[in-house]
Length: 382
Image 1 (tube, rainbow, N blue to C red):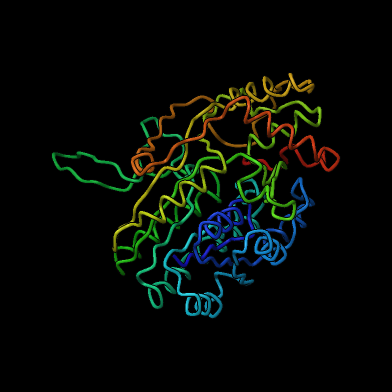
Image 2 (spheres, rainbow, N blue to C red; image 1 turned 90 degrees about the vertical axis):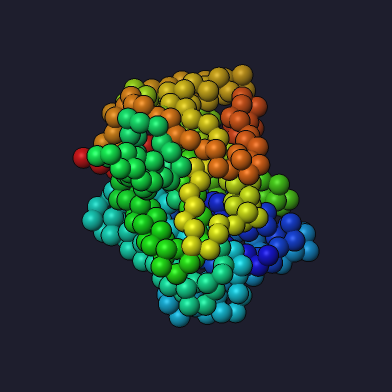
């Protein structure tokens, strides 16, 4: 297939591009490089140095013989995105190209507006361009499990069968996001659901859990092919942050008592799920939703797992409760379903001690680059 990766410079976008290219697909990546600018604004950087997108594409082709076409520009720029779709004619579009951080969106009005404008308007621009130029292409859009919040009922995959006043219907599952970032993802879902209905577009919405991991089959081929690994209080995901704190000799900080429960998956399983979605596209007019995760843990459980993995390697890790900067229940029901991708063949990788120890060792190999000043949260929701 011809596959376009939007947000191809990111933690997930770059490994996804290499994954598809290595398997013989014709791949193009698109990115405006804005996240690197946001990182510079906040004074943070990935733990390992990251080559430029064009340099990474050149090294990948040298190592594998597979080219990756690079386009630098904004998906929200009408002329630019229409030019890329017209020239590349993608059959599948994987859309990662959004501001990915809840804390970033909660800094102040400026950052909330940046997050929503970038995410919602860019996706809407893409939908209209697809309608006009590539109406048969399959859009695979990265959503988030955070769209659902933590309702006191089981979380279904996108839709809910309900009975009300003697009538039955199948409706979109209620959304209860906890940040302006998560709310932008809800807006995306609603816009794309309407686009699929109006224009017969094929759309798969992947509501993804928290991703962890440092490498894939392709990133390990050369140091210049590494993807970004964030541990800071804005862009760092929970396990990445905990592992980095353990290596740095800092307490593993739990928000409140750590009773919040989250869905997670390995970065390699992200690639697996996106590939399964691409090879089994949604039908014309279908807005299909998959909950993309493999396991659920409380934050306290994750902290304990990192402690158990780090201590045998010589790191004196311990957990510490700190005031929760977010507005959320610290103990709640959480039982999301994820049968769709499993039915299509997803084989999950589980979070084992071995996996965590590999992460600890990788982070330890870059220990001199850890900036302890940026690990702790500074943004408060209230």
